[in-house]
Amino acid sequence: MYKKTFKPPKIQIEPLRKTAGRQPLVPDLSRLRMAFVCDWLTAVRGGERCLKALCQKAPNADLFTLVYDPDRMKGVFDGHAVQTSFIQNLPGGTRFFRYYLPLFPKAIESFDFSGYDCVVSFSHCVAKGVKVPRQIPHICYCHTPVRYAWDMAEIYLNGLPVPQRWLLSLYLKRLRRWDLASLDRVTCFLANSIHIRDKIQRLYGRSARVIYPPVDLKRFSVSQTSGSYYLVLSALVPYKRVDLAVEAFNQNGKKLIVAGVGPEFRRLQKKAASQIEFVYGPDDSTVEQLYADCKALIFPGQEDFGIVPLEAQASGKPVIAYRGGGALETVIDSSRPQPTGLFFDQQTTPSLIDAVRRFESCCDLFDPQNCRQNAERFGVERFQKEMVEQISEATASLAEAGRSVSVHRSRECPS
Figure 1 (spheres, rainbow, N blue to C red):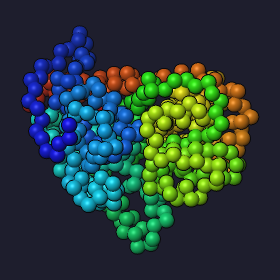
Figure 2 (figure 1 turned 30 degrees about the vertical axis):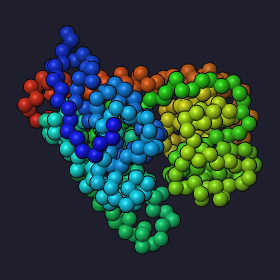
Figure 3 (figure 1 turned 90 degrees about the horizontal axis):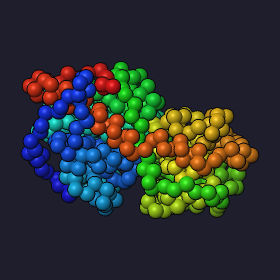
Figure 4 (figure 1 turned 60 degrees about the vertical axis):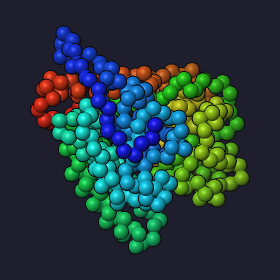
């Protein structure tokens, strides 16, 4: 159900029972008034699948987001009330919401969380900056500190006309100040990878527990097909570096399929050679077939975590990835036992071309079953268990205090 305004349901909450030690029993989240916050819900990618997995354990949770596209999200969050910000009602709000970036902080601060037992934000932009009453724990599952404001600012500024670049750079400085000022609104941080845990420590001075995102193993079956093409599956935005894959395959002449949706689609399509095909906005069944029939996945960007390499491995397919970010935690390099892929060291066309050449010279190293077994370490059930345990810790500390003492914004999540 999709609502613009609503009040949380009245539910009687029993105190959490304690085991012999100090660890609380894992609660049934359906008995808690839960609020889940995310930046926007306009497509189903890795971050949205994290939210979906936790929603399965909290069927009564309410969702809060800047903008919501019910057509693209059809069937994903059925049964959950969704509250949007005022950006939803601005011209082109659901399609061109990124142009309203300067309004994001005010919009995310406009939500009211009175009456909830726990707030969990899934943040890669401003979701972590929600204002939560001090007596309610706020757990931030951080996909990354704001990309626009920190290490990828130059990527987004590159290519803009000088006046726009100057104005946007001034605003990004303001956004960084807001991002730091809102840190005390977070009770504790969770990180989606060691890479992001270290970034949270470096930028925010906060520690975080790592809980890896889930891959839905049931969607994928191990394919024994060797494949006739390489695959890029990605949001088509600058930092994903899909342009690097297009340039490399323009030169090596090998067949590549690029599947995804985003503002870079037309530009990439125009610069691609004839043997490079594009699939715009593939549905789940198309994605599963693309994995099954490919030779290997090309992963040219530096991701915070990156669920796509795990989906490929769940399908029995190896990965050719840039040596950086979350891929270092999900792909087993060809130099190690039971490898599931190989890396290239520079985000340049020659480096990627060389990686494809090396892959073809040693492709017999990559056993589909090894790829699948590696992906199985990141299943949905494991993610749900670790997230529910974390929520248990946060709500139990409040129950012990009799819900009468303000929550102290701790410097780390319990573990």
